[in-house]
Amino acid sequence: MKILVAIKQVPERDAQISIAADGRWIDESDLSYTINEPDAYALEEALQLKEKNGGEVVVLCAGPERVTSTLREALAKGADRAIHIEADDLGERDTLGIAQLLADAARAESPDLILTGLQSDDLGLGQTGVVLAELLGIPHATIIMQVEVTTAGLKVKRELEDGWFQYVEMPLPALLTIQSGGNKLRYATLMGIKKAKTKETKTVQAAPATAAQAITLERVYLPEKQKKTEILTGTPAEVAAKLVEKLKFEVRAI
Image (cartoon, rainbow, N blue to C red):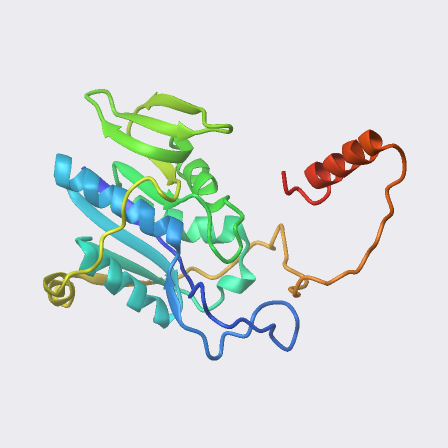
């Protein structure tokens, strides 16, 4: 089984973020980057499937030259090969544009299974995986907690709301978006880091963006603070009911 894992490089979670001068994105001049956490769980799922069923794990990442550090980390953890789609203009491409880059590379590999994280830590749109599946014309399932290979294809466990789960059987090839927390992430060993230096990393140039973006990011800003005082009136029971309603629907604390 050939498993392709699409990963994204994002700023470190504890990085000090500041807004760029044009106000349309963050200042990237002095940031540290790492693998997107949901994608790390997708990689872990792929590595465990390989250990159980054999095969090959290929990691795929689009971005500038700096994303090679994230690809090397994936190789050190156990991926067999890496593909770098070299693109310095990801900020000028919407979800469809980025999914098209990934789809072109995926077609050349003809994988049996494609895994992505559920969403990215920076934008959090949760769309790239399903759009990629649509472009490739393959079935997909989202919010996956467990994956089992069967004689007919796959059996997957999906996380629903309120503690409910759904089990779905599907054929291969397929695409799954993996939920964080389903597995325990592994660390790269010293031996894995040494082996990563000898593993293949293929670089392909991104095709020029030809279509206009369907969605554009106009402004990025810090949450705006507000001070507001509201007096609740009525009987104690009425005030309590109003307070619960506001905590539930406005503050969303309960």
